[in-house]
Length: 113
Length: 114
Image 1 (cartoon, rainbow over the protein chains, first blue to last red):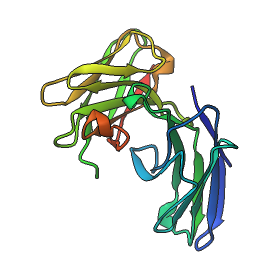
Image 2: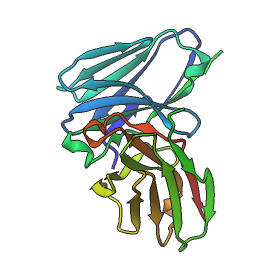
Image 3: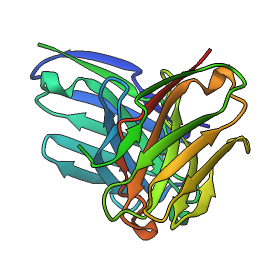
């Protein structure tokens, strides 16, 4: 079953603009990660934020986590055409991997040149 | 490029048949996880193998089975294929079980069941 829901399901913006996508989840988590997937191919890890962290940055990416609201957001600044992809949040509850990662349904981001 | 490879890239099977998908982990990685991704959905965890033993399993029936070999490559086997098994199957390797969160995904195998 899917743990989270990304919002919006699809987002189309102009190159250079910022893109924000949100993720909500249902149960307590240990960590939350964001992944990118191009054209139905393999997933690429973007960033991991631990449950005791509130914000994390990596290059043009900014992730926030609000465990009281069970939600996270991913901000991509100064978007580029190459950022066109699907973005997924994934959570884990610890347990050494026995339950794997639980992914949301994803946000499909389109950057218009 | 993550160094994780999967074969075949695409596969078409008929309902009721059996299929074997293969995954070669990144060098030195002894933990592998398999995921099923239906069209328009996020990946769902099938199972994880560590040093040739199943370490955990998601909500998939027993007709989904796996193997991990001494060189840490692995297989996903699906028996009695159903139409709903049509999906992208992804494997991900990790350096070791304690670092399983650092998953490196392969490009996937697209399975179509007719």
